[in-house]
Length: 108
Image (cartoon, rainbow, N blue to C red; front, top):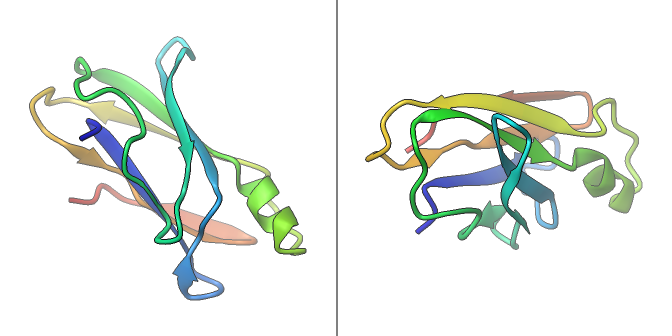
């Protein structure tokens, strides 16, 4: 299993957001993994099985997702920086999305 996982929920439609491109990057911007959300809004294998403690970034291509729905949106991409403090723990970073707002949290 990937050390970092995510899922995206479209809060405006009340369902998982499928087809959202996501990349995982290290502090220098190097891409460590990428994928697109499945029908359940999840990416089961996003990046490496193990990562060192440090700062990482998830980049969500929300503009393309909303364009495919014919929906204007305010955020062309959502970038979430987070600190991976415990190299032994799994990190799940969900995104709750709507055309003009988003929120995130550390999931389980």
